[in-house]
Length: 421
Ligand SMILES: [Zn+2]
Picture 1 (cartoon, rainbow, N blue to C red):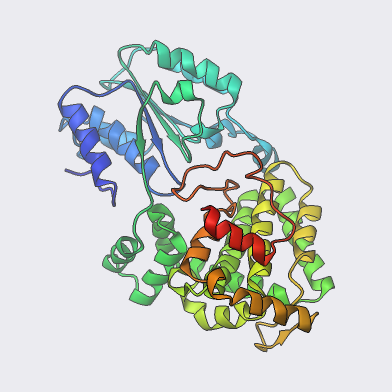
Picture 2 (cartoon, helix red, strand yellow):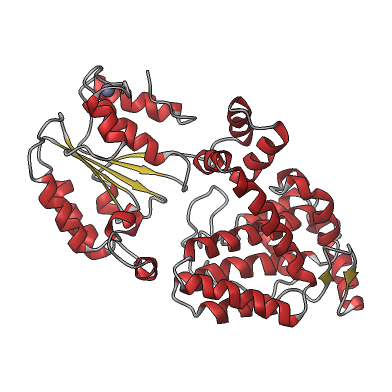
């Protein structure tokens, strides 16, 4: 068996069984967080269906397996936002928000042809959550009456697709992997244990992301430097903050949107760690190599301040996705850095309103308003850079107002949230 997939054993077993029993479906939806191995699983499934050596398992060595892996098999098409953007300038590609109907129609023409060489004609469609209503409806035609020889695999970072699409697919919901499994995988590949633990913590359970970090050691260093820069923003003067916002906005406008979202994700991760430390639950932090700094930084703010600012970074990411002016959005979030200032270089804390801050801190330390229950209650309601608020069991929170970020979180509000969950 050469699936070579880390984790997701149940999904591999299910796919193997469906091939060997002849019960494979015409359409699949592989849904789950980004960078957890969905694309590799889709590729392996296409290879398993078309392998010349085995039936049910890919050999990875035959002509079909190799050409599918290189994306040059005439019967297996791999498409998504990236292929739709071929030929566009980077800034034009960055502006593309969804999979267009013209793109879907092009795939459909392709799928109407019988396979030349493989057993099945296949489409692996990445970013399926970006199908808009029009293109979803066009896609439905193929899902409702697929030719016998066609297999479609929709790969989506969430299962928030049109229900009529989801209902016509066999759905495999892939989950994040445990931190220890990612760390053990990296150590087995020669990564030093301390680095492996750090990458595993940063990965948040995304094995694909962790393996990319392992292949690019300079990224690990760059990320450490970025954390340093972001943690230092709290001690920066107004001019330095505005300069930083300008740099990020410039990068965003020139097509480096993915990088800017990555910076916001990292920044929000830093503040989320501070929230965990301040709430008395440091075991779950991701920046495990900066625990001391986090403890000192968290002491500079009140819990409601940390909560509100963490939410504000998530809200900024959402505003960018909704075409907000990048410079204004980033300046706005920086100008709302809480009143206390923590200088990461000197380790000193400066309070704009010492009396107020002290009062806030005392409020936070009330026995009923701290600890893991509060941390769980607050974190599960924060919109991440993914832009979506989650219910405690990880589903999208679709209740009215769930996307609205309050300007100010009072201690009482947090107390309420604790019981509301
Ligand atoms: Zn093969």
